[in-house]
Amino acid sequence: MCPPLKYYNCIRAEDKNARLRWHMVMLAERKTKAEAARWFDTTWKTVHKWHGRWKRGESLQDRSRAPHSCPHKTDQRTERKVVEMRQKTGYGPHRLRDMLERTADISISQWTVRNILDRHDLTEDRRRRQDCYPAHWAWETGEPLGHIQADLKDVRDEETLGTELTTHLDRAGLPRYQWTFQDSQSRMRLLAYSHRKTISCGMSFLTLCVDWLRSWSVDMAETIQIQTDWGEEFGGGSRRKLERLNRKYFHHRGARLCRYPKGRKRYNGRVERSHRSDDEELYMPLLRQAGSPEDLLDYAFQWQAFYNLQRPHYGEDMGGKTPIQKLRSMGVEAPDEIALMPPIILDRIISHDTVPGTYDVVAKYTQRMSYVHWGPGWCQAKERDPVLEATLSKQQRRATVNAVKRRGHSTICTCPATLHPGGPLESSTPSKPPHA
Image 1 (cartoon, rainbow, N blue to C red):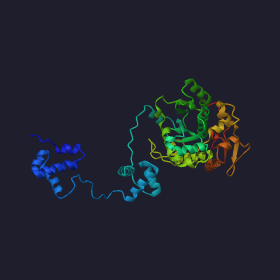
Image 2: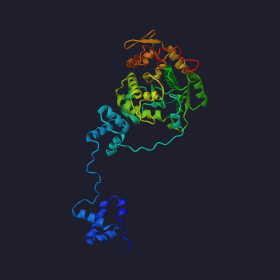
Image 3: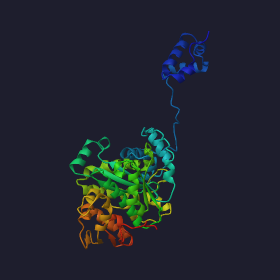
Image 4: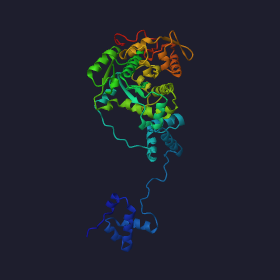
């Protein structure tokens, strides 16, 4: 007669191990241990072990096999510090390790941090990101500052920020849209804001950023490739319109506006991921404190400086470097000020009465600016410019001037697009690429 139960198969298949062992022990009590072993298809030794525990009044559950002592286990103080920082910041193992070393003088490996998070159930199961050929190649090849990912972020995201913050944004009159210009390799970013989502703002922002980078005369790509989505704010999906925008705004600047393939949003994955950092480290903690657009510009400038100059990044091929450190490791001898373009509100530029039309925005804006000698905390210009004074707050002007003065320069131009380490540029719209 074949036994109706196989003990080891049942143990592996079911969670109620104690109940199964209780039935085995009861059979051994009524009959013999050998009979119980034959009936459950196991050994006499197994039946004897569980029968003995039952007799002594012990549990029939499996005992823990963990060692009684572990001399190399992380001490409780360090473990509590890791858990506290994780709950406060939401950082991963790499960033937590660096933060512990900087703030608490605790040196542990990232794998120890990961194990601590696992023990306290503070990790998340993430789906593996699908590869999107050939976007990965587009990010990691080419010359420094040669591949740019540009995107528009709607700050008024109620699902992410909640009703309280979005309501405050509306009532305080804060700009709704954030424009982001990010180098794909170094992750260095430049920001601007607007109340409207228009092509005027889009072209003004992109040309402003290109002029800013070119004005520093550093070793960079001959042609800057600016990759965007298919939104109308960047020219839409018309090839003829895209070519017209390239001829009018970008070719003479040594740049080219292009699109990633439709349905392949991951091609702009790095700038999209940076928007999550904006929500978590800028808007969620500080948006409620911004009572005016000028306050938001100040916070955005400080966030941009921290992001580019101090914040370590752990993406592919970054290894905990900041964007400016990564840029220099690629052979670009760039000063810190290249990452400190002050964020502005684009609507204030394109709506000014000195701007006759949409397609001459950047040229007229640049020509309108006069040379400025910075005084103690305020600009003294030959002709005071209402566009500049309405765009840059006092704190931003001071921060930018101090950054430039630390490099040994005392005279700059008021327009961020023409800020040059050796002084103001002669012309704002060259007839040929600046690198030629």
